[in-house]
Amino acid sequence: MPAPVQLLLGQRSALHDSAAVAERVRTVVPGWRVELVPGTGHALSIEAPELVVRRVLEFGSTRRSD
Image (tube, rainbow, N blue to C red; front, side, top):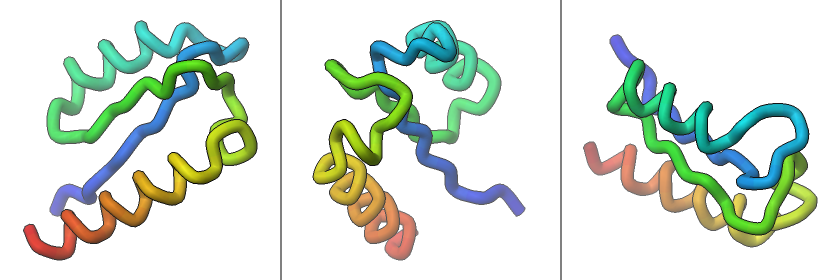
């Protein structure tokens, strides 16, 4: 039974090439929701807390209706 997954990546992460990670994930697991967040690094919950909360709540509400 597959689990729903949402992956938020900071576009300017110093730890990895976010665009390459996003493309690889989309290729390997196309059912995952992947988003590159512009203007952020690796610490999304600190750099864009409102966006992170909004995405988590949206993802949770859309998954309940599936």
